[in-house]
Image (tube, rainbow, N blue to C red; front, side):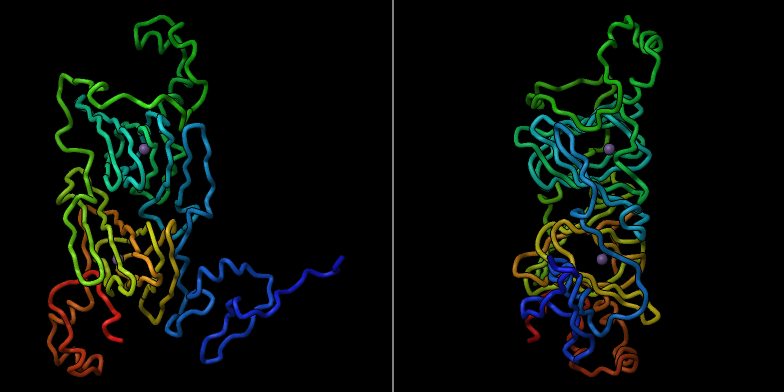
Length: 393
Ligand code: MN
Ligand code: MN
């Protein structure tokens, strides 16, 4: 038996914290080489990184998995990522027939269907109801306080939920089974006008997620409210929306201007091709919460006062950009990078560095940055959210 833990031998395939100017030194371990390989800009930060920025990344792979019969969930809240105070995210899977039980909460709920299909139900205070099926690339939005449910259809489903409060937890909502379990049976009897025996089998605690049969067709489950259906749909087909196409990718924006019920959450679904980047920009309204859907990329966040920090992201990661901080997202892989950028706001807004400069006087830009016609002539008055950068090589 060795009397000491072994150190890592130097190996060409193991990245070392050494910049190409020679700064740094080898790391003999202990170390997590898998993590270092996934975070090249953390191990060897660009020389332009400086200052003390907090952590702006958390992976769903590092969260607790809540496993139930009928599905699972995991969440990234201020507990996991303390900077993310505006929004919290939940990744949830429901089996065919699996149900996220009837519940409600203080926060509004925005969701994006990643895979499969689900049936959602809700009602508003006027007694108008909403029952709809949601497919891949579709969204839903439930205003704060309104009750709802989600059930997996034939193929089951997986989705991302986003809540307009970083302190939200999906494990502490108000659930119908929990309320029944904590209401005296004689009160239930009086409330519904049926004998107490009708409640003999109600669950003794919150179910959260449970397994049920796959529901029948939407038509077969129709419930007619005497007050009609809700006036503004809780559903929006984001992927079916015509994207803004630019060389290098595309963007689909959804906020209260095209999805009127979504008053507190705005989003953009961004596609960045290999060799392209989401241009340098910032948002003049609120913090940005990101969810990476496919591929890999890197982002540098500029905080002013000489501070900037670079992070690497891949599918399943959450990123965060505090209000007004400058940033870009570059596709660092060989497959298309898709991600969601989300804001606690009724509108999606951003300011493009390129457009801002193009719409300024040439003299001011020249004298401020000490740049010549090469850059000044290339500035674009139109906003291109995603740009190709390989054409400069
Ligand atoms: Mn909910
Ligand atoms: Mn952004």
